Length: 105
Image (cartoon, rainbow, N blue to C red):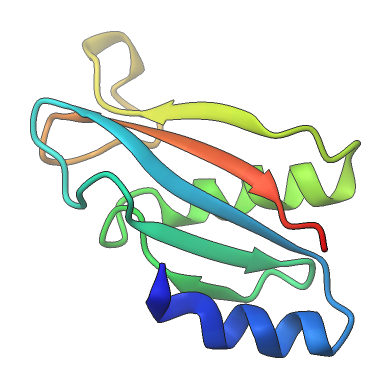
């Protein structure tokens, strides 16, 4: 989380709304440990990583949906299963659970 604080501070100083995604659980193999974080501002700028690139685009979409919607935090998961072979997923075969919330202060 410390690696994204400077970007969050800069965006907030510019009056931008920001959402933060955090890895809260991993099932099986995962690219990042729980606690890994990524911030997204209302313009789609990104700081940090929650998956090393596997699902970052989908996480940006989720974060922007929160910022453009009613601001309700959500728990999302990304992984791989046979019936979702073409969906966004992790190439490592694991499942990551993310909590995405808007920052407010």
